Image 1 (cartoon, each protein chain N blue to C red):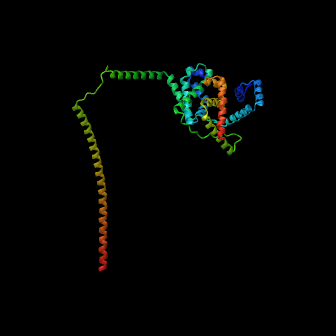
Image 2: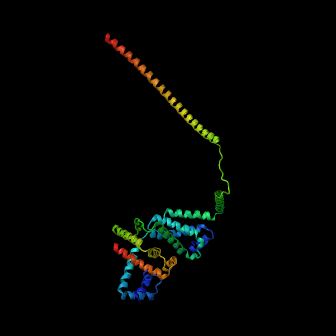
Image 3: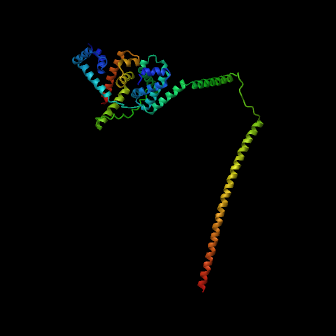
Length: 186
Length: 182
């Protein structure tokens, strides 16, 4: 038995797959008589041992796969639900109609719908828009001026009160000054 | 009472959508494991797993033999991986993510052993990325998915002897690549 024919059998023995006991015995006898095949077999056993170290454990696909299941559920619903079929058909009809309309227009079979507006109408429309915007601006400025005026009035009232208090304090101080001066001159 | 994949498939084909959901639950971990080892990137593996099941669902009617569901599913997953790699261009080698921590077991390994395992796994992943695609696919399917050689042959539409010779060559190349680093 040649070494080349042994390679295939080596795989069967290595993975314990469908090995007839006689063929298995024949294989190991060959290994005893062939150091190259024996060394190769030992190497492959070691390589398998290295491969077995890559253990994903209980690695799970994670949330994305749950999403995948959701996607599947969604697809399932779409494919099977009669309501969705109706929606599909309606959407397809609308798209076809739209497409046909566009093609018909491009080919000149249908008139292009254009908006006819005179220059005067256009000016009036623009004017209305500008006037409306200016009125809105004026309204906002007016509101702001009223608010500033109210704030000023409130502040002026407070200042007036402070001035009255200061005036009273000044009078008291003058009276005290006069009294002290009278005492000194006596 | 648990149904077989075949039963679930037949029910799904008859319009019972929840049965396909059950199949997804049964298979998503295995498919994700295969794709993750193939592409080496968690996010991408999640996306591709999702794509695989969406494609499977859309093409459920084309599955003529429900007994071949698993190999059909692996075939879709492999196509998704190959398509993604073609789009990504081969000149950009994906960066290797950090290696997963080994499972906590009763006989806890020492920190040194854990580190050594991590290094070996990193080398292994690098070596797998460098392997010819057809050899890598066979190794991943055999070693990590536990498929039989004839099942791999079915997924890849190849003769049994070709699968075995790819496995043999793949293991030898892997060994050589790792020897350079170890």
